[in-house]
Image 1 (cartoon, rainbow, N blue to C red):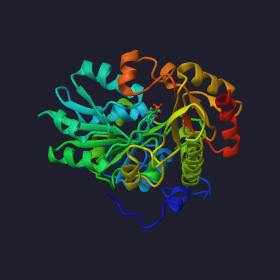
Image 2 (image 1 turned 120 degrees about the vertical axis):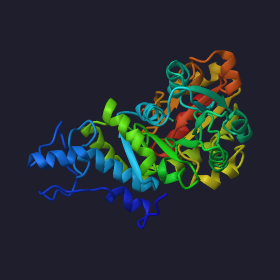
Image 3 (image 1 turned 180 degrees about the horizontal axis):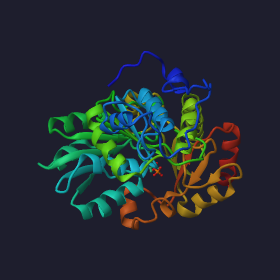
Length: 391
Ligand SMILES: *Cc1c(COP(=O)(O)O)cnc(C)c1O
């Protein structure tokens, strides 16, 4: 953990900026695949690592480095390694830190492609994963084996907003010499700093809130300098690199991250409170509500409830689709972390690959709707939902 001298709002617009000889105020974009050296000796020094500086854009682009530095300062991490996508970041974490014959304990409530990655792809390469409850640390402890190297969790989870006790999981992990990785995509460092809570690794899909405007894909892995060396070596060798253009967009995205996260959270809280009193709404799941099963825990590790609200309707799939189809402002899409509010029916989209029995166990009913609150006026969002709820 690095203690910052500056506040997050300042870091978001200032940290990591480096200027070229032109002294540009807004960061330059470096659209070049390679970099030239002043001499053979300088080339040798760069390649040996004796001298810092760019070599080749697969692993050293100044724009990518600026994004990495800014995000590292925001998360309080010693080092950040950027990737082409969130999934590439998760893959690189495992490829950089683990080997065949080792074991992962992961929350059952993680991003669908992350489940597929651990189960179907990494399983073929001899990395075995046990899935456990996001909310019961005792299950994590019981799942630990001699060869367990990594705990992997996402909090709050998607779409049910279950909150995992990051401090407790870090405690269990460290008793056994295991690393705890937290996918911090939903909260971002503005609302939650997993390294401060004891985690060893923070992972981001920058595609979501870090960009925040639905434009580009990106990812990042953060942690202690020596731990990130393996992750960086995988990037340098295998090349799932963040593009120069996407890095520039993400650097700009970070500048408004604190403002946006506060606004997303405020809108989500208002919607959640309002939804609780609406006809046909069986339950509302939002960590910022006192009625949330892990409300106290959420408020002890998050600055606010975040931008994602889930709610369940009495009328099952029919009622859920009616609400979704009656919206005129919200976007019907599975994406999240955008200025535009998105509305999703998890059972038939993001979680449709699960069997009905698996969805039942996971608590993803046919009446469940997930909303990722955007930055529109919340009165318009309420009216948008009221239209489908009222009939
Ligand atoms: C979207 C997402 C990912 C994957 O990120 P991509 O950038 O789409 O590869 C991983 N984790 C969470 C929580 C996500 O929402």
